[in-house]
Length: 338
Image (cartoon, rainbow, N blue to C red):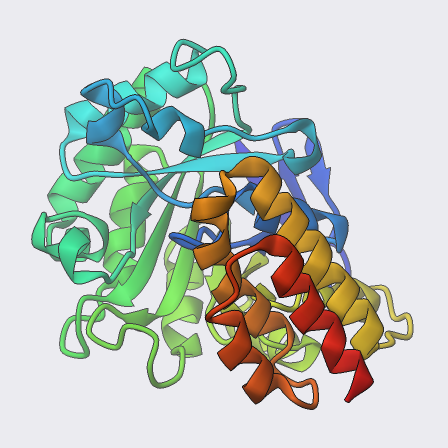
């Protein structure tokens, strides 16, 4: 059972089973982004509850050999939810069972929770009836949750969107059905599928979901600062907040939010601290993946870190042609000479 309660007017107290999460600070699942390196760094800066990038339930059921690696995590990433996506209740529930009973792979630990993705807006996912396509089929979405709840002893949580499009903002109705199906917590991204990541997150729809259910509701969307987090809390009454793009290249957002909730001063990182953390992130990406695959991914990651540093534009151009970790580090540290 996942439970949240207000800790103070400024923050939260969140509890997942026996794990206390003092400020309700969650790291969002981001496909192709929230890998182990990203999660470890976010955790070190104050993220209290993590979620993996989404994993195909069908791939697990068909025995794909590469998929279990996406479910791997270390002790320095706990508590963490492993997120599944799929449109078949039997596949999602079976994949969740294999994860929760430890039979997926020897190196995959049992997570704190199973999260089900019903919010991904990517065309390839939606065209298969998965992700945010499930916002258009509430009975199917509820069945996926109910079958998964029956299959595992872990909490089952769900991430949804405001609706599929502007004419069908049905998140409150969806949330009620998922609660009835046994979901322990719901995270709401305040945009519709057709919005993708454009426009602004609708805080009113998150507030409506909070009013519609008794289970905890986590708000997601446009949280790039402590002030945005405060606005989310005050306008929605949500029980926790989930940071997504706001943490990309800026793990310090969790430090900022922790300081805000604890009424302590916050000092933004210096350019030197930013470059050092970017280099550390680069090292970890290359330690978890072969360098030939890590370098292309790292280019985008490094670009997020240096975004506001003088000379970043020229450095990004150079990073796009960097072929080794050492070359990328030279480019990063050259920015401190600007």
